Amino acid sequence: MPKEYKPFQFKQFSVSHANSAMKVGTDSVLLGCLATVCNATNALDIGCGSGLLALMMAQQSNAKIVAVEIDENACKDAAHNFINSPWSDRIVLQHQSIQSFCSQNKALRFDWILVNPPYFPEESNYSITNVNRKLARQTTALTFQELIQAIASLLHEDGTAGLVLPTTIAQTCKPIFESFQLYIQQEIRIHSFQASEATRTVICLQKKPILVQQNEFIIYEQDKQYTAAYYELTKDFYLWADKG
Image 1: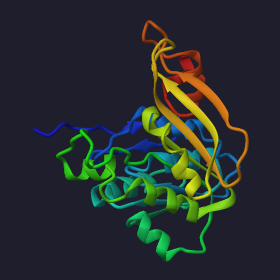
Image 2: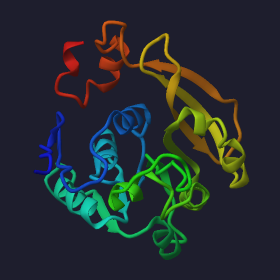
Image 3: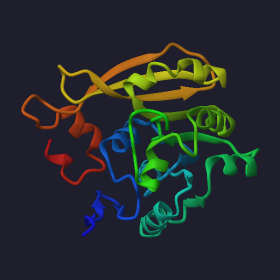
């Protein structure tokens, strides 16, 4: 029998993700917590999946939010989650590719864009047989260059875009960003443990080159308990985070 995925309950909203190829995970939660979207007026979630990042942005701001998703099954989850959230009047779901969305909204600009992108090249050794999961995780329907081009097109001149990437990939992306006149504002390298190598990097991009802020973030103590920093970062979202 297929595995049953129960809705993931956060403090102010719930995320049903049974139909989505990618389930609620630490990468998106960290990106949503680390992005300082509180002053956003209009925001965009590219490849929203079940809608987690859009909901996190809605909780932290008064922004009007657009969530774009190409996969029909993920859209079913996102639509359900948005309608049943406290911010249903501020989140609009668009069932289409980001390329199509860009071509139809050439004058539209956002002051915050968040994306947990597909980042494994289709020709890589990271093999995925599930079609929907492949769309969500590999650059099959959306190359990295197309994604960055879309961000550059849709980002306000004074806006910020946040992405979470494998650290090995993030280290090679600077020339791609700069080819679309996007510049790294901040890099936050995510470590599972203090002594372990960073496996993910949260990157914030802007259209004006500035001095890059570089930070480290550690998820676990050596005893596999969450760090005080992780509890503090996630306390507005996770039900259990207050105990830290």
